[in-house]
Length: 370
Image 1 (cartoon, rainbow, N blue to C red):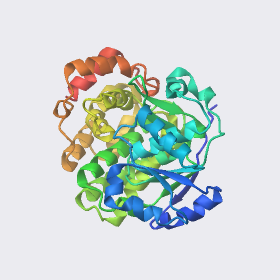
Image 2: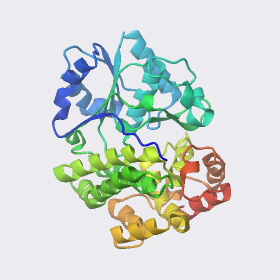
Image 3: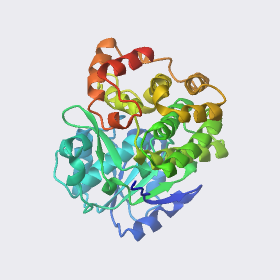
Image 4: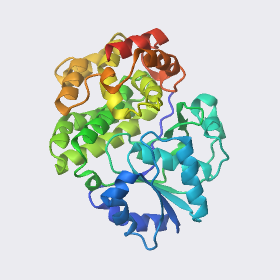
């Protein structure tokens, strides 16, 4: 027997951002906080979206590339000091996860570490928290429909806070917000979405709906990522990539795997501040090879889909869209890898990889991807 559930309300389509005030009214939110980053403020997008609202919202723009507990606390202070009663997460996965962290603190006392899955936090999280609308501006993490917020806690560990209560009240997905996203960011976020589809499909849990959704997302990502990188205003490609990200996250409630068990602690290396999607892309071929013996016919399914060995297909895609050549090119040293290999064993994605890895296995995967 398997318990299978999906998910939250999703409003998807070009121009849907114009409905933001209507959706806030439906949630009875009078004074929202927009949680975003300085880059989006500089583009003018935050101002344009704020102008859609009846009253000027509060704005927190201090989201770092990998969200931290320190930033969550600062944003929560802005929420409290401005008398807010709801939150809009606007941006990539970092802004959405930070917004989820703020939302958690509207009904729970800190620190955040006690709510992480590895610390048994699932049972400590309840639904008496403020409403949230998630508005993605990249097509990668799928955090808009994810149960998790992945945050670097005060102790310096990048961990998942996971609960059905962490799902945004509404995911407002407008592909127009991704038009013109730079090629490098399109590539990195796109490979994040593709990696979610691949890892979910490989995960061993019995969940045929998740497998089907993952394969549809993979189909969209495979046919459109190159085009989205080449032309930031390719409407069909941008639509496909936003749906790929959405479906990857809808499916990964089934579980992820070794790629994410490694990229979470790699992303916690503060001196490097590495992009999650880039790390996923670099590690995926080596993890595919590691998992091959454990996934049985699914390897053959992927081979038929790609019309090539899956690991080779992803390596070629990475080269075509300009993903860096390996971990060493990002500044990851062997000493860092040794530490990460131990931390990966503690990550919540470790247990759902189809082939259980040891620290030595993780180190070998990273060295292969260096």
